[in-house]
Length: 454
Ligand SMILES: Nc1nc2c(ncn2[C@@H]2O[C@H](COP(=O)(O)OP(=O)(O)OP(=O)(O)O)[C@@H](O)[C@H]2O)c(=O)[nH]1
Ligand SMILES: [Mg+2]
Image 1 (cartoon, protein in one colour):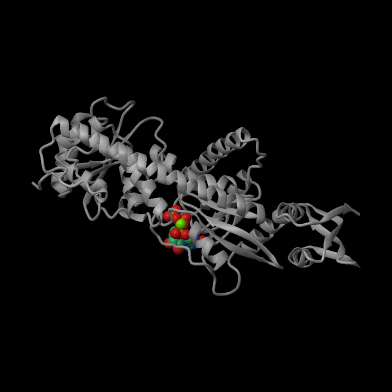
Image 2: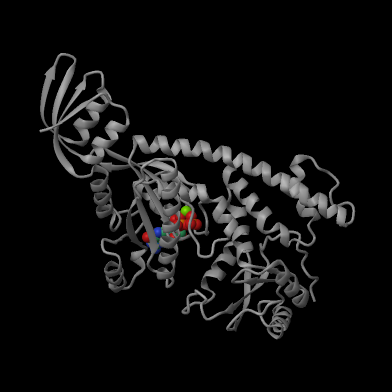
C-alpha cells in the first residue's frame, strides 16, 4: 500500500486520482455526463483519473458526507487502482475531510480546493497571484493539518525562518494563526491599492471609449474570440482558466469605428466563495461595460447549465454594482447583452441553434476560431450589432466647434455622416447625422462644442 499523502499542500499534479460524488436530489450536475466537468477540472490540474464512485443520498451524512460503508469501499477502490488521491465533486468541511482521509488513507481534495489549485497554477499577474494567495489562506489554510512547511512557503518571503522546526504545540498554533492574519492584512491592503488604481483606469477608459466585455463559462472560447477580433496576443489555450485577469485591446469595427474590447476570467458553477470575493474586481469590471458579449460553447452538453451559471452570476454582480453606484450618487446603466453561440462549427445540424434563438432572441451563432478564407462564421453580424449600439440612435444635428478641436472634427468627419460644412472665423459648423452614443462620448471627452438640433 502506498504511504498516505501528506496534506502539506494541495497540488494534484500527476497524481492518480479517483473522482467521487454524492448525488443529492437537488444536485445540479449534468445527468448525461455526471463527472464530465470534474474530470476536465482535475485533468487541467494535472491529475490522471483512474476511477469514479457515486452514491445517491437524500441528504449528506453528517461526519463523512458520504456513507461510511461507501467511504470504506472508496478506500478499497483506491488500493485496487493504485490511486493516491480522491477528488470530491462538492465541498467538504475540514472535519469531514480529515475523517475521510483517515478512513481511505489517501489525500482528499474537495471541489473548491481543486479550483483554487488551478487558479494558483495559472495566476500570471501580480494581482492574480495576490488574489489566489488570499483565497488560499482563507480556504485551504484551515484544512491543512501538517501546516508547517506550507506556512514556511507562504510567509517565508517575509523572512520568518525556523517555523516548523519545533513541534506543533498549542503555542505554535497561536503564533501560526497570527502570522496568517498579518499576511492576510498585507495582501488585502496591497489588493485594495491595485483595485483602486484599476477602478480609476476603468472610469477613464469608459469616458473616452465605448467598452465591450467578453464573459462566459470557462473554456467557452472567450480568449480565442478576443484574439481573432483584435488580432492581439491574449493567451488562449485549451486549459481551463487560461485567463485569470482582464485584458483590454482596441477592436477595429471598420469605417473608423474603434471600441475597447476586454477579455475576462471564466465563470464556473459553485465558484469557491472566497474566490468570488477576491476576484470581484475582475468580474466587476465587466458590469461597467457598455455591451457584454456572453460566449457560450453550444457544443457542450452542459451548455444550458453554463448559461444559467453565467447569467445568474452576472445578475448578482450587476445588482451589486447598481447599489454601489447608487450609494455614490452616480447614474448606472447595466450593459446590453449579446449571446454568442460559439463553436457552432462543431454542431451536426442547426437544431440546437434554433432552440437557443427561441430561448434567447437575437443570439448569434459564431465560430471564434480565425478562418483562413475570409471572415469567420457570424463575425459580420456580431460587428454590425456592436457597431449599431456603439453609435446609438441616429439624429441630425449641427455641431459648432473651434478649429482648435482638430481631433474631434476628424472623429466626426470619419465616424458620422457630414451633410454640410460651414466655416466661420476660427470655427466650423458641421451639419451631421450622428448617433446619440457618439455625441455622448464627444461630450464626455470634454470637447468644446455647441450642439443644435437641426
Ligand atoms: N471548434 C472550435 N473550437 C473553439 C472555438 N472557439 C474556441 N475553441 C477552442 O476551445 C478551447 C478554449 O478556448 P479559450 O479561448 O482558451 O477559452 P476561454 O473561454 O478563454 O477559457 P478560460 O480563459 O480558461 O476561461 C481552445 O482549444 C480553442 O481552440 C470554436 O469556435 N470552434
Ligand atoms: Mg481565456
